[in-house]
Image (cartoon, rainbow, N blue to C red; front, top):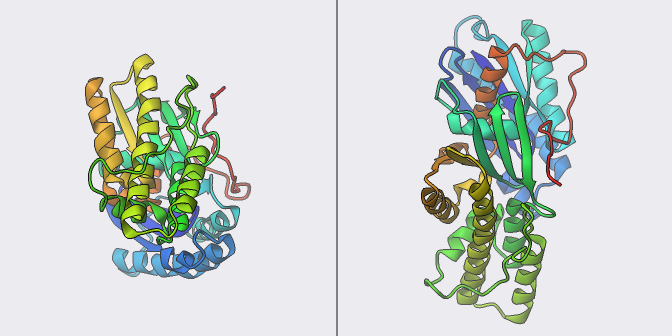
Length: 341
């Protein structure tokens, strides 16, 4: 089996995945949402200190799950997120991974966090369905990725400014809601009666480029909040619904443009924002119009987790993609080639 570690942002996570059939044997995560909520977003230094505290606790729990006098004996490799992410938090996971690999004499598998999200679609599945295209919407990324094979992937569309997840957080902050913003905005939007969403402009409506943008939409929310002061609960819900509806319409507009020209049998939706029920439903309707099957990760594996890193690690192990213990380092950028104009 593989032991995997994820620490790219504000979630500490460790998992155990069986190599033979990619079955997830054990998984645990410690969220830092409560600690960061007072700041309205992730504080890197605080996140690093919490990883330093939480990762050893999770490792002890993994050790107890394995049991026996030599609990780590069944391990064949250590999979670790090395990119992209916050450098100061990636390092916490990498140092633990290197210590384990050195002491247990095990190979290291370096995993790109974005590839991990793609493989979240195939946790507990022995085979990944490639080729595949995915829409990745998370706190740090809004991308369309084409994956022909585990080693042949490319970014073909991305956000020109903020990610959708980051925009949800900022909108929540403007409206005085909690952190993380995605679930809070969705919950508030659900209180808005149908058809009463606050009208907001659709980003890049007249642009044919395959790209995303949320800075203008976010600014429109800021102006709406300033205009409608003092905010009633009804208006707060209307603005949330308007933002969620318009952001989703923007995603669908660009995904539709992609599907009109791409040969796609199935399309994946991954990343933390993919847990949004409204976005899932609307994208499923769009894919059905094109006769394309929509794949979505289980809700528990949408946000950052070591289970998806372990699933990607199985692919790396099978392909013999082992990293050098002494030279392996973290990187702030993904290794997936960016082919956008």
